[in-house]
Image (cartoon, rainbow, N blue to C red):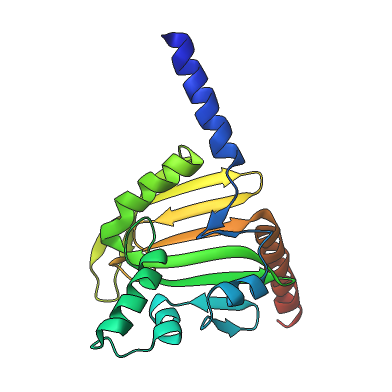
Length: 197
């Protein structure tokens, strides 16, 4: 019996380490911005950032007259395909370096936090850290927020129960290349800022 458990955990841990960093089939370090635009016509491109808004994608493909039954039946599978772990999702943001996706982020309703956390644990294994912090609203309200983080050699996955808006959770997946590039850029900005003091 113990041998079976050891084998199960070894296979699970191996799978979690080998699962690529990806969101909705967009693999970090591999998928190009052009592939995203082809996959989701209607995605908004802002320099090195691509926003995929489920409603806008459905509008582009089917039209926006949801009173029309054929438009509704066209839109439903598109909206469904852009759900996050079966939950309604906000806009997906994909960040590019040299035309390749190196970061993916999404906000979604806090009601889906536990479902998304469970799906991530199933795919990537147990988080390397989990902690609770208090977040304060602009009106002074204080809420606890659970953060789960998976630190991997190829990047980081972070799931915040409460993101920038108190009733929205946030998932952020970053490749090592993105992390290194933003750290170098932050250091450069500090150095340049110090020269201007």
